[in-house]
Length: 95
Image (cartoon, rainbow, N blue to C red; front, side, top):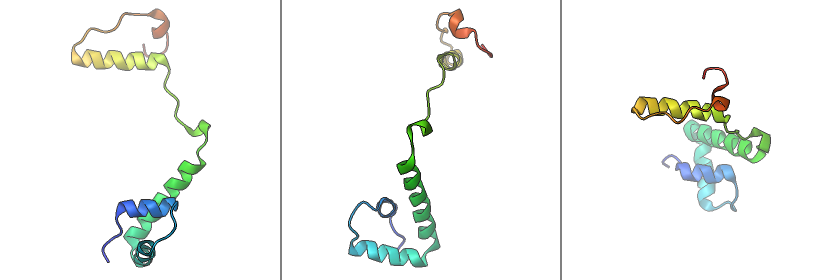
């Protein structure tokens, strides 16, 4: 049997559906194939991490002054004039 398709490995890692004959065949292959076994293990860890994530685990946007500095740098590199200077935005370090 050829390696198990990535999409099928994802479905196995999610384990949302009732197992099929194709799943049984894929699992037999995975038992003998280190590559597919490692990919399934990685996907299973990813699914577990995603399912156990909490709100505090989610990224938060950077402060507005960071976006302003990024915008200025991008505009500077593009040769476009910077946005107006606002002292309350530029008061932080590195401004």
